[in-house]
Image (cartoon, rainbow, N blue to C red; front, top):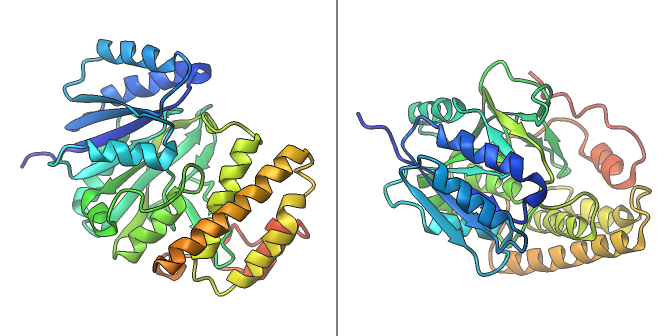
Length: 332
């Protein structure tokens, strides 16, 4: 029986500051022991990273390689959607890997094997470690009715169901994408885009699973920056879209609370950051409202959710009133 073809989509955008990690990521991918094609999408980088990466790719022994230069920065969602359009028609699985993640060379074989054995799984990830390789960054995410996402910080003892898999490195069954309509059926750009994807996979009858294998090491924040206006704008825009499109019982409370309090939290003191946060919320709710009028919805109850007190979570996250001690209840 022949092994299924896998299409690996790898994005680049102005990665000069982390180019050594990006090259290690590509080198690790080249050692994957499954039939695969590598699709590299450059989001119209303005630094020297694209040329460095192209030259490095020419030195790798890759049987199937496609290099695409986007006409503009399409973000995480648009860049991956563009890569998906160029994927081989015979491919059975789509793999997304960030340019700041160095995958474990054996991980893809384990992930494909498990997906082949379990046709009910729409998306899957392994356990992602921080770049130091010592601590777990996440083993998937579980969300609550309060629309708070909880990264699982322990190495699971067995495969577990999660709300969504990390967009830093996951594998998606192509038939699940076909049911959704396209890879990212979403008006996002970057941040929180993997979250609604998880809901949509569950909504279309598939499961999202974390496999207890080492996936790789992740730097994190490579392209977005840390607490920059651009970062906060897209974070709050993505979050507002999810809130607006969700069917959470607590939607009105969440929306009212975040509009009133979140941009004014003590962690955001810079006026430019506050402005970016407010603009992100405004635009996100506007886009989400437009999508909802077109019939879009995110059914959060189709996916597994964290048990606990949603109201307490909302107060903690959006007001900073009290520490939530219930968020670890899902740990196995």
